[in-house]
Amino acid sequence: MTNQFDDTTIPELDPEIASRLTDLDEDDALISQRATALRTGLNEYDLDDEDFDVLDHVSEDPDAITYLPALPVIAIVGRPNVGKSALVNRILGRREAVVEDTPGVTRDRVTYKGEWHERRFSLVDTGGWEPDAKGIDASVAMQAELAIELCDVVMFVVDANVGPTSTDEAVVKLLRRSGKPVFLIANKVDDIRQEPEAASLWALGLGQPWPVSALHGRGVADLLDAILEELPEISNVAKQEVGGPRRVAILGRPNVGKSSLLNKVVGEERVVVNALAGTTRDPVDEQVELGGKVWRFVDTAGIRRRVHLSQGADFYASLRTSAALEKAEVAVVLIDVTEVISEQDVRVIDLVLESGRALVLAFNKWDQIDDDRRRYLEREIEQDLAHVAWAPRVNISAKTGRHMEKLVPALELALESWDTRVATGKFNAFLAELAAEHPHPVRSGKQPRILFGTQASSRPPTFVIFTTGFLDPGYRRFIQRRLREVYGFAGSPINISMRVREKRKR
Image (cartoon, rainbow, N blue to C red):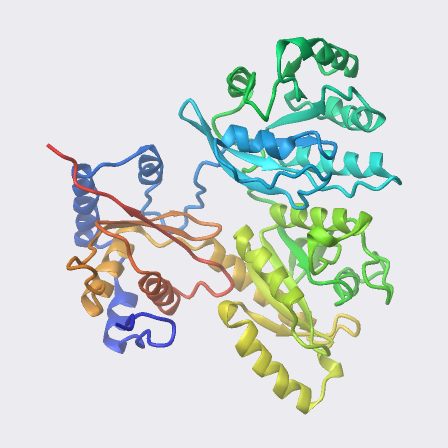
């Protein structure tokens, strides 16, 4: 049977329903009372700690800017082939990270969710610097610098059988200056006879080495107990900065004109512009006044097609791009209209979506295309960028400055959507209207029922819906599309998560 809510058959919004939803009064006492009654009804269902975290942040204030508590972050750093990924798998209790004897198998920073003694945390496996003979110290140091910046606790892994190397010492200098808690892990200590090998690591000056065997699990439990004592309940680094100039990351594949755009908005040659792809290596921050407001722009190194195949400086440029995006609020993704929209362009956009940042699409070099290319471009946009049809589009020329005045309204629209909050009473009334308009299909003789919904956080808008059964992906997209039709959310991703809960047994 065809899902009546697949992407091609989602029905258009009935004008009458649209009018009723738009006219809902957020302060209407009846709406608020109904939401309160639905919330009270959840007490009859089995809820966990995460559910209560969400419900504690329920707000009727449409201007409230809230974030769900961020899990504390542990980063694992170290030279290639010291056992970082094996340690990740041991801590997670499952095989998630790729483990091979070949040095440098892990290329991207990869984040996993871990738990120990009912404490949850994010675990970042940061392997993957290029194990070349030249410049390895600088490469490892750059990786460590990123890890330090984006975590609460560092696990620095060293092969106890090899002992400290010059590369390890280069990382240690950064770790000591960071002020972050650092645990020195002496890995590959498989039995008590090898423990004296770990003693040599005292020379690194990071305090007590923790002898463990990631392969066999020896010593890992004691290590985790010690780490939890240092780990904050809520991450100190994942909290987003509030206030000050709005932060804009300029993204795009190499040589699409990112540096030219920054130079144009700044009004000077702030960044080296070269026809050679990948000239920019590090992000460059610049405070700029545009449209009567001060903005902080970050020009980032171009993202290569496959990060894990990048060599040397390009690989670290990609990592720095990711770090810059994590600090931004809105991303301007530049697309070169003189070339076919490629997988690289889509990959950059998907990176923004994964980060949850607001999005503006800037089609650069617009002054260089003719009518034929424009027709083909529209087809490419419909085909390859349909999943971000909600993002504001501006057609510009970074080099000449053409239509640059359109950039600020697009940024403001995307950020306004990103900040938007729908009051809990209004959101539940919205869900009730949707369910009445088009109920969820019956599956296996049962029809899932929506119990309660709330916007758990903004930046980006994140909605949590408690249900009695799993909602089809098509129905979730139906809810998402209706949210955009009624409330806009132009330029902002929307996250919807389902929590299927059963009634508590008496």
